[in-house]
Length: 309
Ligand SMILES: [Zn+2]
Ligand SMILES: [Zn+2]
Figure 1 (cartoon, rainbow, N blue to C red):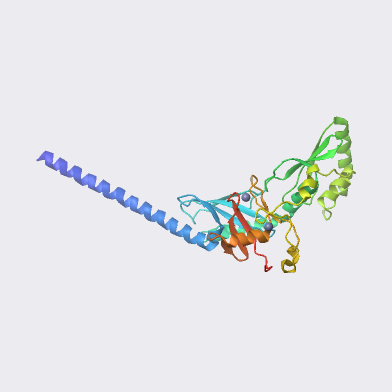
Figure 2: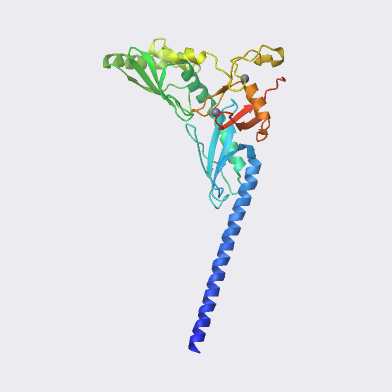
């Protein structure tokens, strides 16, 4: 009798425990599926064509955003399981991030929108560094990420200047140091200090640099090579045919390069646009086609040209 009661009690307890754990599992599942449902519908709002990668449990998502200059940026978003209660954390290849404005009613599209706005703020910075990379003899970094704000540039006489461009105020006088033989470095340092008042924000960065250093800066030996026309990876020609129908693109060289630094294939944007249109997985959002590079399969995005072929 005692044995039976004891057994019965045990059964009851086990059953209760089982019920409890089942319930909590269900609750967990329900919670998880609410999370899935929420995130899924929020991705839809942003647009699936912007989604580059995601973790199986949707707590980590990467979105591709095109800025007004046609540069492709990828933003990674880490979501808390309580989303949207807790703000997501974000990371991207930019010199500095923005403070996310977040409330319990915020959604992923708000994050993308704030990131897009932030990219516009950084345009002057990127056009300044692009200008430097194009015209000066940059020895470091060799392949700069869009987040890197320093440049080491050869200025002649076995000397280098290393400066850091202020990403929040790219036209301002940069902080710098000189590398080279002591005597010349001293001379340069004094010259820089003496002339620093002559730095004018409205002038081009390079013009200011040459003004303060009182010298014309040498160009990169690669510049000439870079200026030479590159073949298009699709039509294999350097220049497009001279044709009135191509309007401003008539006879022009390649104008699109794959962002993947180990690929860097050049294309005519018109050729890439035609190619992307022939691929069924290509997605279109407004006037931009999103697809993958024909050579390396990394994401590419081209603004649709209104030129008719
Ligand atoms: Zn082409
Ligand atoms: Zn590529």
